[in-house]
Length: 349
Image 1 (cartoon, rainbow, N blue to C red):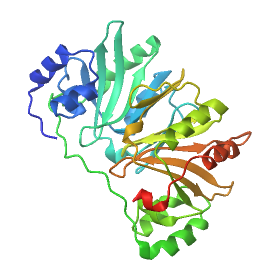
Image 2 (cartoon, rainbow, N blue to C red):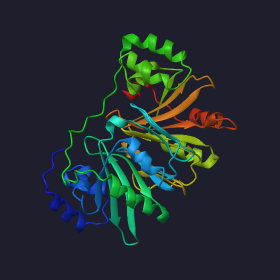
Image 3 (cartoon, one colour):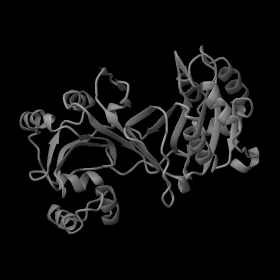
Image 4 (cartoon, helix red, strand yellow):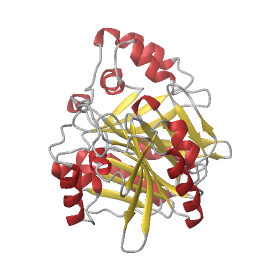
């Protein structure tokens, strides 16, 4: 994204509207959010290495924090502690009870330690962006005891380059639905043989398809198209019935998973909001174009999911029933899914 403002211009605009969210101001200015943050290097921001190994090395020392992962239509915020980090060249994972992440290191390009003055205090956060300057993952400090760790890391790990201009690449457009009707019989046959949900992406890749394209041609009993308002109906039922679910929200660089109940729903305008003490979700219902009920076979029984897509075919979020030993919520979740309003197949294309 081309930057048409000097760093001083950006700082001036930011100072004029201190309560405006950084993402919203960047969009109004036509710049990337990373460019807005970089303009404050040497003042409120410090560049650090963006690799997940580095970021998680700091995160595990910060005690209880708030983790945030978002895309254009959904924001997932979880309170918890980082730990049980598993590095990897292509995918790295954080596996704790509250913070459950899948990170994709190739998309972690720019990172900053950010200190923002608010009316109450200084808010400290780690913010990671992709090549286009879009936010991949953010970590917000919550405990004053972690400030000494923060300060020591900032002094020891600041990059030599603290330039106030960030170089970004054009944003990659979402891939629309991709399918090959000639391979539908192979798709259905191999789908029925799956023993793990992770095998699905390998199957579609082998058949030169993607997730949404495969859903559009697979048909029953594998998928069922749902009305867009089925998402809100499902969230309301989950909250009312006390069903534990897994909510997946992600972008190209990170997927964040909430496992547990949804207790408090607070709609506001086009947004449906989960406002629980340790989990917040902010979902743009008006961005939802397609919704699918999906069933994939696993060794432990069928995994049933609700999956929502935007008008460009990008995945907004997914919901599964929790299937852990001693807390198998899959039957209750499957019952909710069975009662959702369906669409005729021709209405989805």
